[in-house]
Length: 528
Image (cartoon, rainbow, N blue to C red; front, side, top):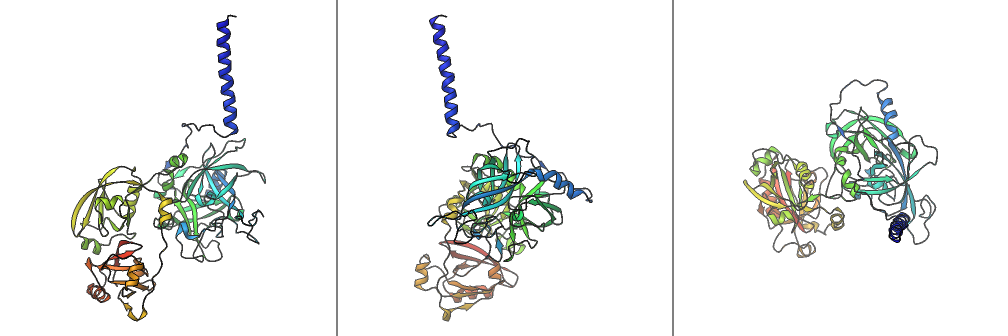
């Protein structure tokens, strides 16, 4: 063999050896790059009408076919002591419970004795370890599973068990992506069974109507793969989401209990139409027939983004009224109909503020599309790519206007971190005045103006009390709100506010501009 051939041979040999060594090192250090071609195969959606008779075998067949695609999830993590209402906006422990309702959040066993977790570990000065249990469903045979974010967000160790597995047979999994707004997470099994995995099929959650039959499969109280049946009880319940942002949910009376978190809600074809997420209960922490599932249509389009580890949403820096416009209110705004989204708050220096939007404006078109209501506007905004400039048409003082808004990127983590708890100011009972709206007003003292950082010479009165179920209560007014305007008229004292309110007839909307948490908010109250 010539010296040239020998040289080429050794060059090739060295190159192959280098590649082998590199592969070993990266595998040991978990540095192997993820192939860009490895994506989650999102199940297709079946939007065909739900038809056909239900017989004695309908639910048996659904359970038999879909249970293999449902997994039990066990977690081990450290307690954070987080408020249970952080994600779901409950009004107290007796009203809203995450599925285990304990110190560790939903689906986590409360620490036992001496602050230690179920595992018995967690020494002095350390956060106690707690175990949790939830449910998930397989969306891709490569081991990708959808579940609730609150099931896995604080987990240091995640184990998955499959339908029909032997006792103690579990597989490791890791979090791929999370979303706190829809409370969903995508995890992937890092250990795989020998047999192929089953996967779910998606239905169309927009197709569901009250009275439609549904089935829940989950891990209640660690009783894996339990099946319950019920109906859709209601649609569009603004129960989920995060502080200041709501996720409309499906309400069902199919029994869901601690451990059902992240499990599928199935239609009569055995297709996933929702992810069981929350329950409304009393102090027993058990099912009373009021459960909530995140619609699968809201989750389906997020799966590719969850795979990348980041959810990208648009934001324009406004809050809109949750209630739909009434014909009476639309008439006073000068609208041709009751369609549109009423802007209640505009974030200072945000995209909408820079474009000139103000509290009290009604957005009727967004990016060339008619805005039906607040939900429609929110859906359009969050689906807009950040950096895009869109035309927005709105009404102000009975006049139609148009502006351009450059959409920013929504940062939920920072937004929630900036949300400050409101402190109710001290008031003077001797100067309180009642109104016909079910609220009591107090005069604004220099001390109150200073503590609330009120603009100079603004504000006619501060709300000191709100009667339950009154018009003010229904409109979302609360103690500490300062009334700046009544029906677009600036007010400077309590007497002026009372006088303006008396002018409004029963059944007619009253427009208030209030000062809350350092910003102005537009509120509509209907006088009874």
